[in-house]
Amino acid sequence: MARRTKRKSKAGLIFFLLLLIGAGVGAAYLYNSPEFERVKPSIEAPKHLYWNKRTPIEITLRDNTGLRSYEVILSDGKHSVILAQGPIEGTPKSHTIKIKYPKKSTLDPKAKHYTLRVKATDKSLWNMMEGNSAAKTIDITVDSTRPNVNIIANSRMINQGGSALVVFQASDENLDKLFIKANKNSFKAQPYKKEGYYAALIAWPFTDESFDAKVVATDKAGNRRETHIPLYHRNPRYKVSKIRATDKFIDGKITDLASSDPEYDNIKDRLKKLKAINETMRLKNEALIHKLSRHVSDEMIDSWKVKKFYPLKNGKKVASFGDHRYYYYGSKDNVVSESYHVGYDLASTKMANVIASNAGKVVFAGENGIYGNMPLIDHGLGLYTLYGHCSQLLVQEGEAVHAGQVIAKTGMTGLALGDHLHFGILVQGIEVRPIEWFDQKWIKKFIDNVFEEADAIIEPGFPKFPKKKH
Image (cartoon, rainbow, N blue to C red; front, top):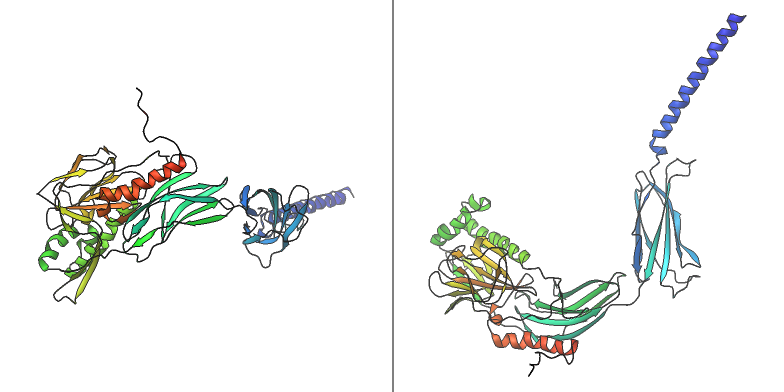
C-alpha cells in the first residue's frame, strides 16, 4: 500500500513538473510571439508648436507591427473637445492625422495657448488584448498674425543680367524665415544698422527674359507675407556669336584640359571631347564658383561701400559679359557645342598685375578647370569677384586683401588662347554685369544713394559725419 502511494506521489510530481514546463513554454511563446509584442507606438510631433488655426496640424503615428486606433483632444485649459478619434483600418505601420481647428466648439476662440493630447494604440494582443498605448501632450501657441514687412529703399531700376539693392524692415515675434524671392532664386538679407532692418543685393540672371522680386517673411505658425519690390526693368541686348572649332583648337587647349581630368582623358572623339570640356567641365567649374559665392554673413553691418572695380590697368575689352557662343565644326550650320560667357575679358600686357579694387577675403585661390588659376574674393553683402586664367596667384585662401593689392598675374591657363584676364562679378552665386560695377556713377546712383535714403529713415537726424570740435 505504501509502495502504491509512493508511485502515485511520484506520478503526481512528474505531472506537476510537466505542467510547469508546459506553462513555462506557453508563457515563453506568448512573451516572444509577435502577436503579443510589447513595443508602444510612437507619436511624431514636437513638444511645442505654433499654430495659425488655418493650416492643419499633421501628426504621424507609427508602430512596428500595426496601428489600431487613435484619439486627439484639444483643450484651452477650461474646456476640451475631441478633434479626431476612431479605429484605423487594416494594419498600417504608419498613419498621419490632419488636425483642423473646429468651426463650432466650447473652446475659447480668443485663447492664445492650447494643449493637444494624442493617444495611439496598436493591434498587439498584449495587455489583456487591449494592445500597447502611447500618449503625448503638445503645447500650442496660437499666432494668426502675418509678419510685418516694409520696403525702406531700393534701386529704382535693374538691368537684365544686372544688380540692385533693397533695404527693408521685417518684424514678427515668431519670425522663422526671411528671404528675397527673385524669379526662381532666393537671396539672403543681412541685418543692417538696427534690429529688424535688413539689406540685400539681388540679381537678375541674364538668361531670364523677365524679372520679379519680393521680400518673403514667414513665422513659426506658417503665416506668410510677400511684399513686392518696385523696380523698373531694362533689357539690354546680349551678343550671339558663332565660333569655328578647329582641329588645332581641339587637339591643343581642349585636349590639354581633358588630359588633366580622368573623367575626360579617355574621350578620343574630337567633337565629344569639345562638348565635354566646353559644357560638362564648364558647368562643373561654375557649380563650384556658385557654391563658394553664395555665403552672406549673419552679422549686423552699419555700412557697406565699394569703389568701382578696375582690375587691370590699361586693360582693353576682348569679350563681353553674357555672350551666347555657338561652336561649329566645318560649316556654320553644324553647331557642335554652345556655352555662355559669364565674365568680362580684359587684356593689356603679358603677365600684367591683377588688382583687387576693393578690400575682401579670398575664399578660393587655385586651379578650376576652364578658368585656370583663379582667385575668388568675398567683398561682403553677397558680392564676389572672380579672376580667371591667371599665370600666377599671389594670394592664398583665407587671406584678407586690401584695396589696390596685386593678387595675381594675367595668363592663359584654363580655356584661354591668349594672355588675358577673365573678370567676373557674382551676387549670391549669380553672375552679373561687371560693367555696372566698373562705373562709379552707377554705384553712386543705385547703391550708395539707396543706403543714404534708408539711413535717413532708420536713423533720422543722425549726422553722417561727426561735427568737429573747435
